[in-house]
Length: 313
Image 1 (cartoon, rainbow, N blue to C red):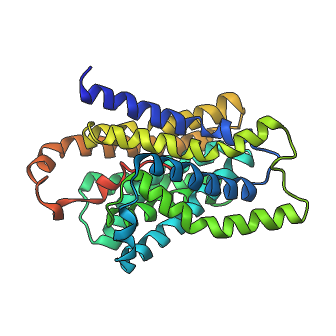
Image 2 (cartoon, rainbow, N blue to C red):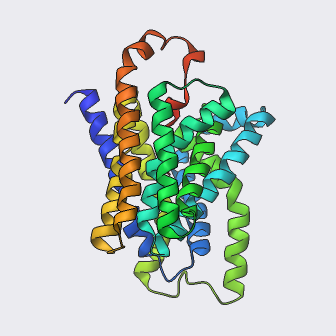
């Protein structure tokens, strides 16, 4: 089997796991979203620490200690990913899996817009059309919901901003996850301690299966990320960019087919606009691929497009 084919399998496995995350987090109830988030953070630190210890890979800490700017950037990234994780868990456990899928569908469009407004990058005419259709979709969905789809927008906005922050750093996934989770670990531990002392913690009081699932939320967080890293090493960027749609498609299917969330005609129309926007975006990315190959050696040639291949954590 070629490295590229193996990479596609790793990528499908990663995005497949992310796609079925709603089922996993649903099984962590009756713990509250905040308790689930706190345990996810703490057990991520534990699991990744064991992994890094097994790999004897702690050299990156010296680089962090010597770079306050990098530490500050990672602290900001930690805050953003914490908001993203918390919003996702809240969405899943408040019967809004379909809206969380919408958030990851529109993330590439949000990242493109952030690239223009923050990094002063240029977008093609087709990309502007895609962003415009995404904005129209949000308007249609706002009318359907009766309010802004704030969970979807919070997921897309937090992960889009996280992507731009991470674009300026070069830590591998395991090391990045360790640092980001460690930044959040102290307040997470404080919250777990307070919840336990108040007698309101569900951890350890529901069932043995529930306790094990809470502990393994750290593994569930790290495993698809590591699979994604393996895929990114051998799969072309355009291939990874297309693979990223596997996760929200599966999340949407889970919301509709397993949890029977409603999809009235107006909501379906809003999703259809998003899908058309993503088709336009993908076609434009494939059309521009030869041009990107010519400028690949130039580190200043990166665009917001490349940020959309980051994993939906």
